[in-house]
Image 1 (tube, rainbow, N blue to C red):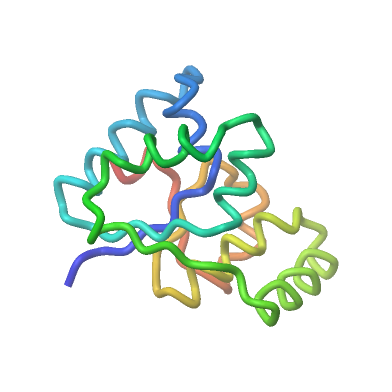
Image 2: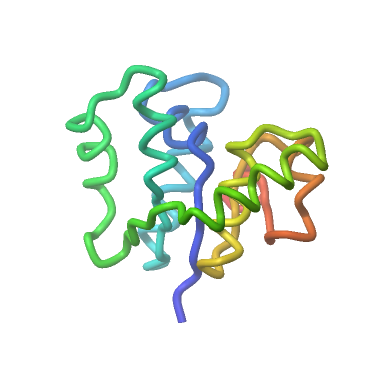
Length: 136
């Protein structure tokens, strides 16, 4: 069975905007997932965060087009996930977006990949997590 990964939005943005020193690692990670035929979980929340930093729908689709269509699974945040994320974010004093990503990774049996070790450390009981540098 293929590995499943949910990439934190910042990884996609690092690659697309070529933000150094992270862009090279982000690209290596994306290429590794392609080479290994892994499944990438991509949510409507990833898309929202990308649009919040100025990417258009066309730019997002172009970015995702490097992944084979049957290796990307588009998912949406459910109302119950959103409510649970709000509660966890309050309880653990972490950003709502981080809790949403962790819950999506958990519910889709994916490993969450993020550079944001500090906040995601508080969610290690929710989802399996790794930093990009540890996977490439």
